Amino acid sequence: MKREGLPYVRYMDDWVILAKTRWALRRVVQQVNTILDNLKLEKHPDKTFIGRIDRGFDFLGYRFVPEGLRLAAQTKQRFVERATRLYEQGAAASRIGEYVRHLVHVGPIGWPGKCLGRVSGWCRTCFRFQARCSNICISA
Image (cartoon, rainbow, N blue to C red):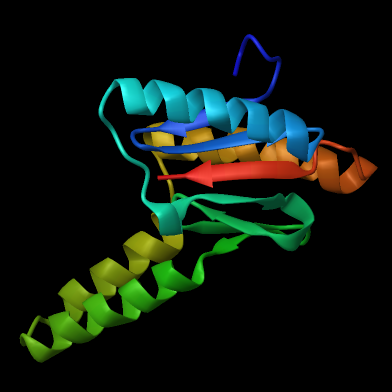
């Protein structure tokens, strides 16, 4: 991807690639698929997305949209499920409050935060200038 001159971010087994054209993106995805095949690794078919960033996309639990960064729907759903489970297990209100504060106030830190910051910066540039770097591939 670096050789192709395309911006990308990888965090663990999740990655985002931006390209000016769908065809450039497809070329890189084919190269990545070849490498993964050689390593006997598989991508989850439901977790690979190729499309336009102006339609929004999820990465590392967040939703990137032209209006800004939001929590992804699945992150919210998991949050509610976990908070409910804590309540049903009789967790103290302080423990549940700690869980809520962590999600709301702490947010992404460390490497995930750096990855989100880079992707968010690229997207803001694309949205602001309606640049042609509007095709994206996300995989996990």
